[in-house]
Picture 1 (tube, one colour):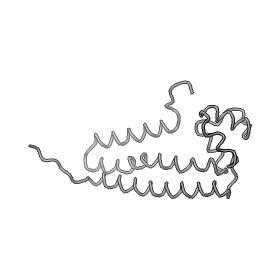
Picture 2 (picture 1 turned 180 degrees about the vertical axis):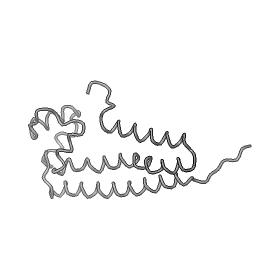
Picture 3 (picture 1 turned 120 degrees about the vertical axis):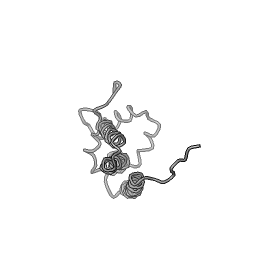
Picture 4 (picture 1 turned 135 degrees about the vertical axis):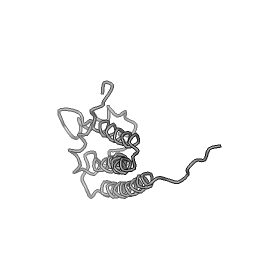
Length: 147
């Protein structure tokens, strides 16, 4: 019977610590941005009183309706175009979600030097590859389908 090491490596502990801090920071930011929106401290694109009329609307129809009724852009607000709307409470809520999604990328990047330092090149390259793939996916450069 082989013995398994149940001790976490330095990189695993570092990854977990960064993930924990990022999660708590993102969660706190999410509560703050939601409060700014719900309390009406920041203006919103879609008035809070009207948002429930869109709850059962499919995403594409929602985007068309929001663009037609409120934004009046030449193209629908898709991809990262929500960043142009960060001055509005209903779109500011997207920022903590993006931050929470990006914490994993940061974790991989931070542990990579330690992996190289201890000679675990395979894991270091996998961590770098994971960070690159997640970054490309988030950027929209690796889009598939007709959307």
